[in-house]
Length: 274
Image 1 (tube, helix red, strand yellow):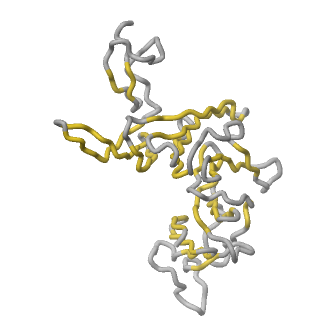
Image 2: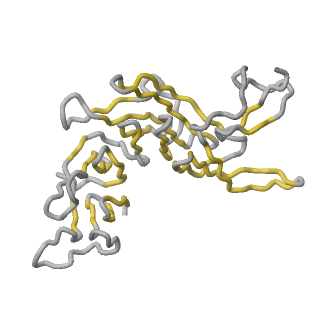
Image 3: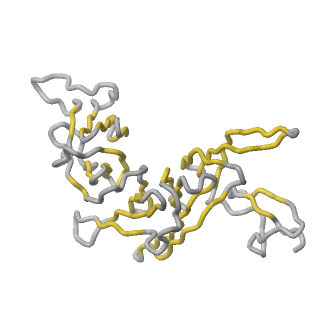
């Protein structure tokens, strides 16, 4: 099995170039119920055009559709019509190769995916092109070719404010973060890359985006009574909340104050001398 997802109350299982689709509302039934008729709710299989050498890897929502990433291209399932054995096609959406080392993510009307040379990672977006049904890809790190070091491990996103997170093997204790601002009628007016670095010794295990923030799971080493102990912890990053600690110095390094924890989920040194 190389792909596992759900769509329109069906389970989709990818194995190589074949996409097996379960019966509606019956995820464990992957076989047709009869050979005499073809009920609309029946299980069925799909393959991409000329996909004999393809391996399907990931699925991501794209507008109302489902976009399937393979090793050599991307394929779409139309979400505006019911998913049935007789009406569903599996056309090629785009042909961007080597775009599936980690699961892509949809954010701000674009699909973000990564490519790597094994040393550094580049991030790209798939978005609607100027010609209908002709998507285009744009580099999001063209001017930062060596900024994102290591292999891509995981994407996550929060839509408000617009933020895309990327874990890599080159930064085991932190994440690369893309913040963007979109305005109606103007498109994307601002984007910026930066990093989050967690306490020294932390090793990130994974991140999960939920309605109330980004849950960050990691190994954390803590010394208790002179004993070095490792815990699995979950930090919650809530970027939508306003900081409860007003400040005038942009949280510059402490000159004698104490450490406090902000409501945004990050730690900073509050300068007690101001």
